[in-house]
Structure formats: C-alpha cells, structure tokens
Amino acid sequence: MQNSKVKEHNKLVRDNIPALVQKEGNTCEYKRIVKPQTRAKLLVQKLNEEGSELYKEMLFEPRGKVIEELADVYEVFLALCKLNEVQVNDVIVAADLKRLNRGSFDRGIFLKSVTEHDPQELYDHAE
Image 1 (cartoon, rainbow, N blue to C red):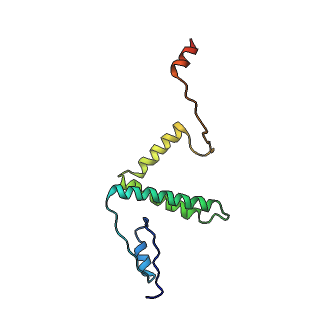
Image 2: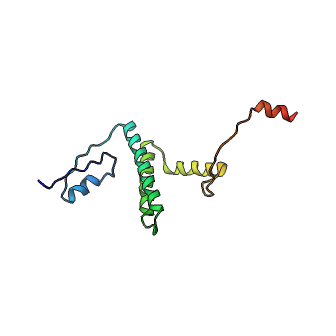
Image 3: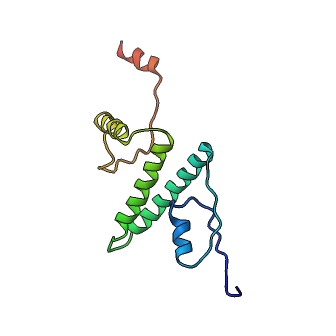
C-alpha cells in the first residue's frame, strides 16, 4: 500500500483499541503487558497523560470533554486498583479517613514552606 503511513504510539491503550483500529480498516502492532511491574509503570504514565489531557480541557470553554477526561482518569484508577488487588470501596474508606483527618483539596491550599524547629528548643522555651 503506497499511501500507508505508520504512526508510532508506544503507550498503554484501552483493551478494545486494537479491534477498533482493525474495524476502521487499519492494522496495528501491539503486545499484551503481563509483568505487573511493567504494567504498573505504564498505568502511572497513563495516569499522568490523562491528567494532562484533563487539565488542557479544563482551560477551555465549553468544558464538554472534561467528563470524558475524568472518565479516562477513573478508568486508569480502576486498573491500578485491580492490579494491586485493592477494592475501590477500601480506597473510598481510606479517602474519607484522610479527608476527615487532613482535609480535602477543595480550598486550594498551596503549602509554600515549613520551618522545622528543634523539639528540644521548644521544650526549653516552655520552662
């Protein structure tokens, strides 16, 4: 085929993407990643990619694709849970506890610095 061109992707994609590519009349080369450590690394890379795409969509009005990008982030989150044999409900409970003890991210607090003081020095001043 003279007008064929290969577009390199080299990234983790959703499970049905090869079939969708073939359905469109194209061909693709892919492999299944079995090794858990490699899969974990690729999923974290995918999480970063989807997070960047989400951020880009949040900058524009109307923000119609924000839900799609959040769905992609959520799907990667689910895959990470499955890979680590963690139940989503357990993550929700842990998040609720963290929110209760440490707060959420709703108010946009940006920590600039922390000055650590010697505990002995604080004790000496208290006397």
